[in-house]
Image (tube, rainbow, N blue to C red):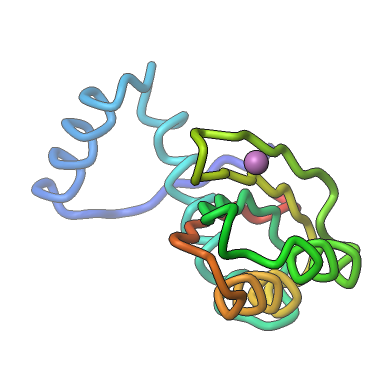
Length: 131
Ligand code: NI
């Protein structure tokens, strides 16, 4: 593992250490590695060829949605590796999708689901796969 040394302002490093402590990191290096991963995630997500893992939460109205539409999306995008379905109540269902692939394909999944009738809410979280 390479050792990196760098210069930063005292104000920035003090703020960083404070934030790391509040977030429960055991030390500066651990917090810094996580901060670097977030930086890489952001870059991978911004590039269409970037590789990402994603968790996509989809809340929909069971009575309004076409289950065929949602199922078609899940079959077209082989980047979706797992789907968890929860019946929240008589109206609302929640699906948790786990996907991995290029950011352009994952964005495609999200856009297609967003256009589907009956979708109430869609949220996602990504992480760069290779770091
Ligand atoms: Ni359901």
